[in-house]
Length: 254
Image 1 (cartoon, rainbow, N blue to C red):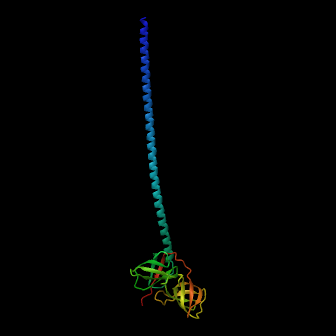
Image 2 (cartoon, rainbow, N blue to C red):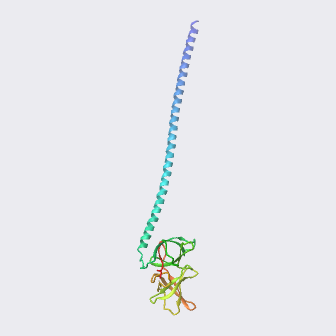
Image 3 (tube, one colour):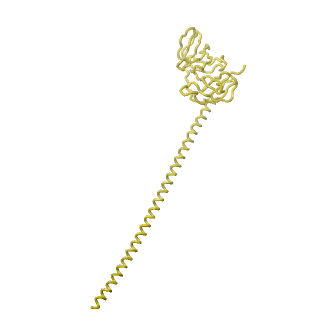
């Protein structure tokens, strides 16, 4: 009978040992699993940070590339504009220069006012005290110019009401005056009645107005009409002022 309590006690000790052993194993397993999970979490966190940093770096590189592209495009456009100006000036410099002392290279800056394509601001070297100046571009008369009250140069192109100068028509050199009508077209007025002029006749400057020298090409006649006591002829100017460079002409002082 005394053996049974001893066996029970031994079994109790064995159960306790097994229990504590299993508990230890469980704790070690849980700790090990926790460390593994922690390690994997930290690794995952590090990967997230790396990916985020890579994203930030990529976004930064994209911004730098966009900025570089914008700067490159700006430089390309500036270079294109410069090349165009060089080409225009090269063509401008090849133009026939009349044997005339008072001639100045000039450049169209901008329109005086939006919507009026017949008046332009002109940049030029310091000029003399002439009242009016002639404007020639691509070997053709395009208008006249004068200084305003602030000493700026205003160009009045053919067809502007303030653009007027003397011309001669055809082989006979019939005299007339270029003026503008209400439609911003250029006409030759005050042609003597009975003058033999016809469509297609060339119109050249007469050199008698104190503005131009004689013989600069203006345009050709497209129609002739009779007015009260004189003839008028419409001009086909046949030009389009694309180049911003032109010549500013002033008569020599006498």
